[in-house]
Length: 178
Image (cartoon, rainbow, N blue to C red; front, side):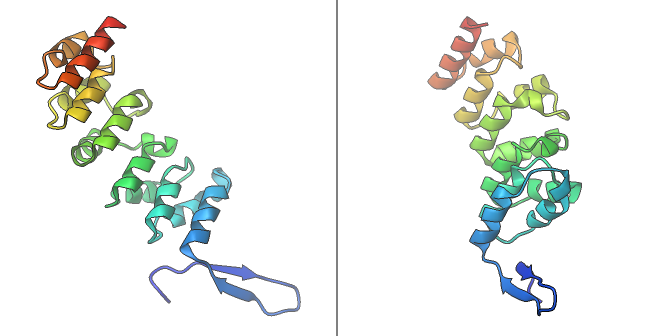
């Protein structure tokens, strides 16, 4: 048996099973269309280990996954999968500050999404995380922080003096709209 195999089995009474191998694109279509509910946790969680990035990225968006699947997707080497897992309500309960900082360090898109939705992550301390991100080397990350009120006015005033013009502008706009 191959490392990963997905087959469709059709059973009829009194006949031999009809079995065909299912392509990655069909698996992705199934992952996209199957109901995201408790009845499909086992199926969706199994797809978290699929070799296709597009399948894993689609599954990562789902809210009904088991802990092993979420842990696997959080550790995925592909940025698109890690970007997708941020939108899973199940994963939001498990994302730790250490994961957030490591993910953000490698990907400004994840940083923007995480900062924009920071209140939704139960394990994160928004002011502390934003304070650490305010010193990030990437101005895109600092700009995302400057667009958030969660870090407080003191942090925004600090970002208002940032070396990057876009960061300063975003901080000024957030402060003006307080």
